Length: 192
Image (cartoon, rainbow, N blue to C red; front, side, top):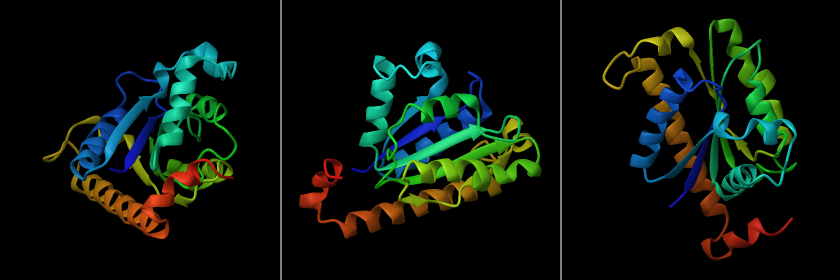
């Protein structure tokens, strides 16, 4: 069973981004993914800000990144970029933490002017971490997340974009699995 990790970079406990991710996690689970979510706000602030790599919650989070076949990196847009919380966590990851992983960036922002965060802020940092496959990403306006709409709580366009991302992740995972014989896939984790 493929494993996907969802990283929620929102500092808010009542996060609209989190509600979107919960819905997406349900879709992924019904598609056969083993899904794990980490709300980065639950990690100890002192350990994150001081990059205490030995703090057990950070060790566990890094191991979850390492174990994942695919990763969703989600953030609300603050001051024209991803949150400082997401950046603090990324700074604790090893340099090539996303090698051999499919990555889906998701951002939510107040205006369409924030749309560029995916291409100009998230994708470069994901590439710096060695992301092997980065999907185009999903940008959602905050106004579309404020009040539940439609059957799934989101408008039809958001539901369709999440569905397209789910299908793309499935295709990427199949391509990666086909490229490496199953009997030797475990060796990739220990080589390099």
